View 1 (cartoon, rainbow, N blue to C red):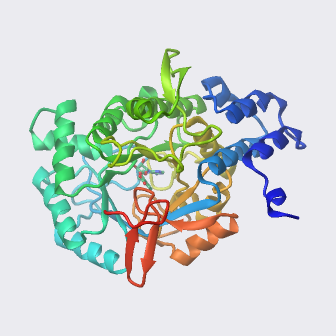
View 2: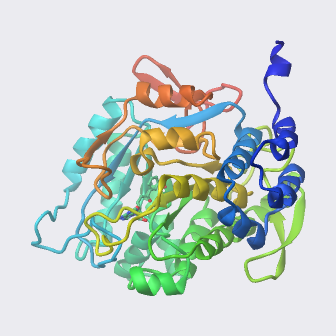
View 3: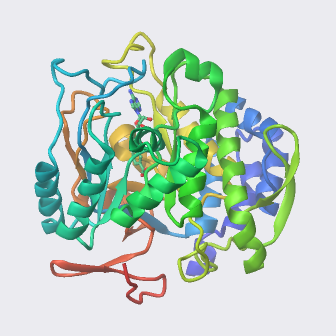
Length: 451
Ligand code: V47
């Protein structure tokens, strides 16, 4: 059979989906909206969560992934460094935090972190993902020194560091410019000048006051988390977003979380879209108010054919990736809860892909999803597995220890078996080319780009 006939285009897959046995006919209007690139509503999200036809939900998300990324499946070569588990907070979902003197409490010195960074760079890592608890006594200068030490020691390696919760903590201890939006912006600018390359997506949990008060009281609320990322985007840093689901939140609260992220991304992308000729569509937001929206996932999806803002075209950052994180009950104050099932994980990830029509990427973080499950997710909306990781202390799946590592060969095989072509990316989703021990980032035409 000729290739062109053999490989079904996303469009023909969309047309065939409603004809497949078991298709839930109530999903037909959603299939139409995906076909036309029309934003999905909260009601659509509710139906995607309640239909027994999970298969079609995942197939729809896979079609959207295919539109955006074709047969590319991303991974990266990275190291996660959790510099300390000492934390001023005691969130009920968290099994990572410790108090001073408590069994298992640890903190790394800048020298120790530097040594880890050098080892990581020698092993070819392109990214360090650095997060910790809210350390009760380290001064702001420590964080600046950490970044500048790493920037000098491993200049080619991208430093993705500090969740929004840590940034607000740093704004408090920096005691400069107050704790409001301007303070956050000025702290982020200092961190950027010291070497910060982007913000990871952690600490978002679920954007809902009821869930906040029940499970992570004391942590920043959604408006603050979104403020930090808005400020980061304004000063040109890109960032990611997570959603920690499967504990006490309802599915409707997950939808609110996704819609709030979507609206924040609209705000960020609106100015860029107007200047780049990307059409805006008017849609009601989470509160029913109609606003202009930027939709990247419709037919003729602009990514990567018409790339999102780059430093060359615009100074703005944006959310690159949504990372749905399934709740791990073990060792937390909520260990009586069962945690989400495999199908719920698949469905939630697929719905994140479908609802977040203005996020270019969806990550199946294999450490939390398991590599086997993450592989299935590559055909349910995800285009990225995260990386080689090596050390990870925040959650441990099925008897794992802090050493949790996947080799490049494992990641590439998992992606290939999912029917996709493995592409190593850097933190900003630029393809990486390796020649022996050396590597460089490229643009999508394969030309080397500056760091
Ligand atoms: O912020 C904590 C979550 C996050 C538990 O940006 C838990 O590329 C499940 O943010 N069960 C850290 N989750 C992980 C994270 C991340 C991971 C990979 C890539 C990126 C990225 C970000 O883990 C925390 C918190 O939301 N978490 N405890 C738990 N018991």
